Image 1 (cartoon, rainbow, N blue to C red):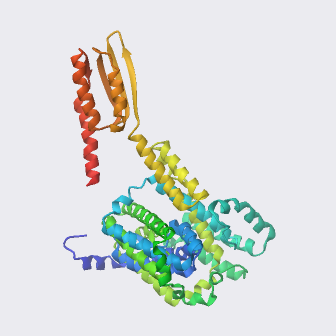
Image 2: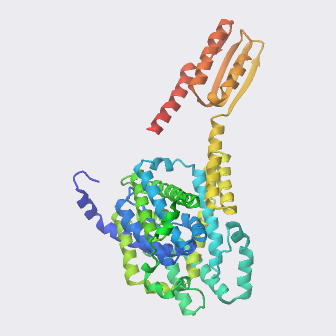
Image 3: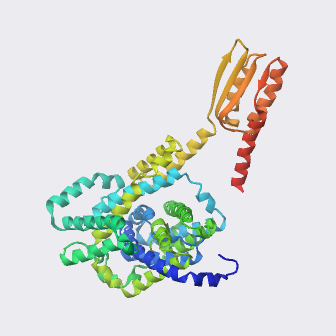
Length: 520
């Protein structure tokens, strides 16, 4: 922001660009809000209310000016599990508690700590969620329902597909609409004329599906069929459920606390990962992570009070915002205003949207999340990173999201412990010249000090010892002291130690200063 320009003038000068960008973001958000609601097991209109809060409230308070918040694919699986286990009413209480946890974390300046989660775990979590979304929504795309767990949905795919193809009727028609939706998204993304690129592929695909289903008068499920009372489609506020006193009494139940902590952790990690990615897309102000975390907390607390879906920062809408020329937080706020106007004036149009088309949109989203495009990058940091990534996915799909994430985190910690406790010592003995070469590889820390001491004590008196540490990643103060003291004893026996003390000390101080900067 120019120093000569006031904040008001800055926002005013960019308002035109922000207004245009907000329309694009609104058009992207509209089908996603409803599709994510269906995948989460809540009424489609609940996602619209979450999108409104994410735009107007979180957009106003956000620490990441160009990030857009709303219902996220990354939380669908967890929310679906919560709804199945506790019901819609308790979901609101859990989201409320999660929001308060996020707000507290932001106020306590814990935003940077959420970013410390291993990228292998984060990408494994997103890919695992992608697999779960794909497998569950494929059943919905056949006008059915998810069978149950992730592994059940996965194993049930062939049978459900063959049944729909063989038996015809509504499942086959729904499958056709779902495939049409996916095809339009893929083709529009790749081949749409530049002048029409501002129309987002998901919206174009949903419009094509609506027109096709209407023209063919297909007897398949439409959005009102998912509501307990189909007439509620014209009154989206009817989905609001304020927490009751009885529900609030269960707030300290262990299962509720774990669910709330899970929502808070995953929503925060996804939001801050998204904010970091958005920062790389533009040259404007950088994200204030603690402020962003607190803003997300306020948004989720409000979503919880209304009993609607939780929200996070979302990459699809955020990247659409940047690509469309958004400059300030006004674009995110305005997209929430357009969602509010749509909900107030045009809710009847939702009755024409086939459920299979929204499911097809999510099947495509799940595929993109699950596609292992990150693996080559992870392999640059070693095979263990890729192993953590795939292990996280497997545990998520075979058990549940929380267990998978915790398993991935445990593997990351074990890897860290291994790195800081693993020391290899290799010897070369030149007896003719009475010279020994000791090669150190890994980390010489207090944990491995007994090993290093035992190896040094085995050096024959009077020998000339050369220490090579080119492959040494780290050495701590305790091991430096050990070598220093051993050198004095060895010289007393007529021996000699040859070592680049200055370079070794520099390696220690470099790591030490790096750690101090990170802590600061």
